[in-house]
Length: 227
Image 1 (cartoon, helix red, strand yellow):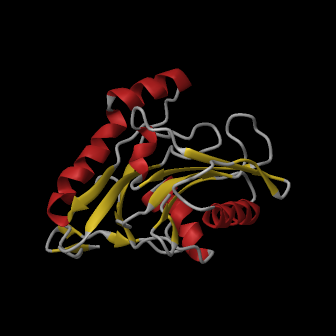
Image 2: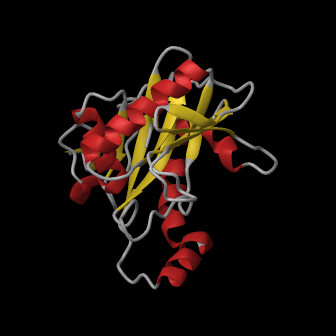
Image 3: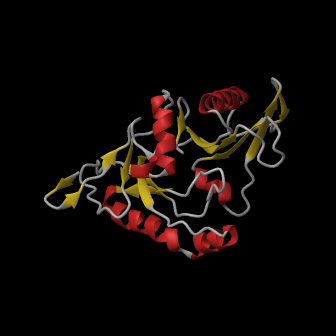
């Protein structure tokens, strides 16, 4: 959509496709269509100019990649592209530019070299309202280390980027056959919340038809799925 020569960001809906907005956008669109709580999200198509004026100046945003090559069966590209959190509306253009630039950055280039990937990267960018988190983390419907059919939940206090900070060890829950086989003595979320994440992750994987890994945010009352 254009207005006086400027490209207006598009709101993500259940109908948003990978062809238009990239792989992560398509996954979020699927979650929205299946009535899972997703923060208000917009996208900027590959190569489009950004006009952030439709977004509230009083809010802050997460700016994430949504490339055509991400989250495929062959390669996840997890952690290869830039993410910016708590971005004010006035800094969105710089954050979008940084995410786009990461498509050809050293980290992603080396990753693609190891894969032998030759398909071009088309980088759409997601702009998502920040949820102010009590805790954040990831959930795997299948154990990523062993491949066993068990749900693994990792959690840190506050923002999810602390999962990759040096010296930060996330709390971990592992659930198999109706019981915990691993859980912290005192975690950043209680067992009831962890159980809710496990049950929802398992149901999402069943509905999606294949194993999933998801990022979640807990704000103290609502469980949000952010990618």
